[in-house]
Image (cartoon, rainbow, N blue to C red):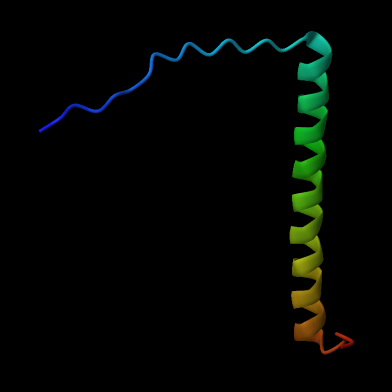
Length: 55
């Protein structure tokens, strides 16, 4: 049986302050977008129950 050949990888990740701020803002924006989708779906459920959902 042979051994797996795993290369020696040493990742060097360099992120500047501006990069980290941009990543943080993008993460917050995506979270806000997902929350808005959840609220929209909950609103549609309420409209369905009330019988006011227009299709």
